[in-house]
Length: 109
Image (cartoon, rainbow, N blue to C red; front, side):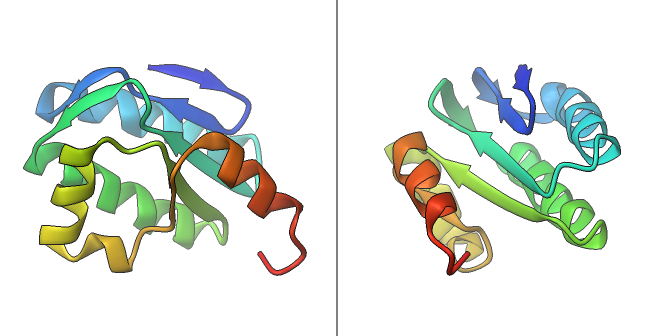
């Protein structure tokens, strides 16, 4: 995973073997007092139930810190996982990073 300021970019498969790495990245961002956390899924090829659970835990941790969590660039498989689990209703997802950045410029968010 690559972290740049408040952006986490998991690459490859997001499964149980990657959960701890994701948790550590989120903790680093929250300790840095970033008001927004973005998980850019552009390089994520697959997500399983453990990976989804980690994203739900991330959402809870970010909300507990009174911050905002966003996702961008999910592929078709990830979108389906979000939809089938109902998490598409809880997660704020943008088609790509440009759409996220544009939304951040809007005063409504």
